[in-house]
Amino acid sequence: MQKFILAIDQGTTSSRAIVFDGNRKIAGVGQKEFTQHFPQDGWVEHDPDEIWDSVVWSVKTALADAKVSAGDIAAIGITNQRETVVIWDKATGKPIHNAIVWQDRRTAAFCAALKKDGHEPLVTQRTGLLLDPYFSGTKVKWLLDTVEGARARADKGELAFGTVDSFLIWRLTGGKMHATDATNAGRTLLFDIGRNQWDEELCALLDVPMAILPEVKDCADDFGMAEAGLFGAAIPILGVAGDQHAATIGQACFAPGMVKSTYGTGCFALLNTGADMVPSQNRLLTTIAYRLDGKTTYALEGSIFIAGAAVQWIRDGLKLVKHAIETGPLARTADPSQNVYMVPAFVGLGAPWWDAEARGAIYGLTRNSGPAEIAKAALEAVCYQTRDLLEAMRKDWTGGGSETVLRVDGGMVASDWTMQFLADILNAPVDRPTILETTALGAAWLAGMKAGVWPGMADFADGWARDRRFEPAMDEATRKTKIAGWDDAVRRTLSS
Image (cartoon, rainbow, N blue to C red; front, side, top):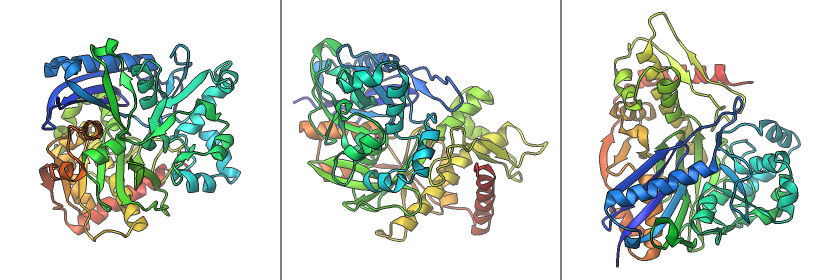
């Protein structure tokens, strides 16, 4: 039996496809960036057709790179940018509007009105989430209210809503499957994560007709067949998880108390809390880590909206570097006597502040400050924000031991300088795995395990391998001084 698995990793700025061999090693890769649209301040959109084209191109490229055909692939696993909303015509598959991206803040006023009317406690109790523009539900309402004729067509059952995974499944299966998985459904503000079903009361609150919602499946499940005409042979789709949940799986964080943090466009830390749906007292999110064989494992999550995106801004906005990889070496040359802080609230602040109106700021600039100091501040900001998340997690969940070991992944973790500062500011070990493509690996494991060609959970976890452990080396006085400066910078940045 063929053991190659294809992972589709549809991200915020690019789509990737990775072919893994039977030993869970990368055999082939395809990746293509797509356009970011910013129609107004705080608005972020993608063209769903461009996303689709980038996925198809990436898959074909990965297959060619691995020197395999579609017939050699045992199954497809999909992982995706979460909370990004697509609504399309069921008859034609054509989107009615650009996708509204998770970073988008256009529904901030509606969220504020719902909070003012006292609806947030109910929403949090059922979904584990907060009333914030980040999540999908208010974006769905905006599209139905704004696109001409959309609400009437939705009420007639002519339209389908989905996060990006659902849109890709629809396209891959030729419209035969309208489905999502529990991790993506749990990020919509419409799904009761305790009862594991769409919530009629929440759908009514956000004015979202239940007829447009996809079927919710386990993360390892039958999501239909990718049509033979796409890649040369029909391939079963057997695994789906939102990107942060797939990374949690890829990092083998299967035991309660294990923590992973992914550094991509944003930064997302998840703490496995097992079967316990832990309510946060510190404005973290309670979320579904994964659902397998009908059994739900929960997590506490902290979401940072801007991580790698700050490096992109330094490259594309300020043009301080030509390539993102140059940021770490540049930061290494910064004057250590300068205390420059960047609070990258370009699209508001996520956990634990949840301030949609905050905007980015840099503090502590002097005449001697230059590109190196700004680059250093951008990288350090990610580490400070991670610390804030982990401190909140420690307050919310006391089920583990005293030491936290953070497993990290994503593009930014290739920088030794950044990972050492992260360990220093956390005062905790940071483990970097040998396979950094943990998001794609998690999606691949779901599909491979379901197909019966990859190992079960215990053997997969035993195969997790560490590339390097970063141990804290900063003295306590320096750490406290730096954290106090960061805390002051955040206070100055908050909108109220």
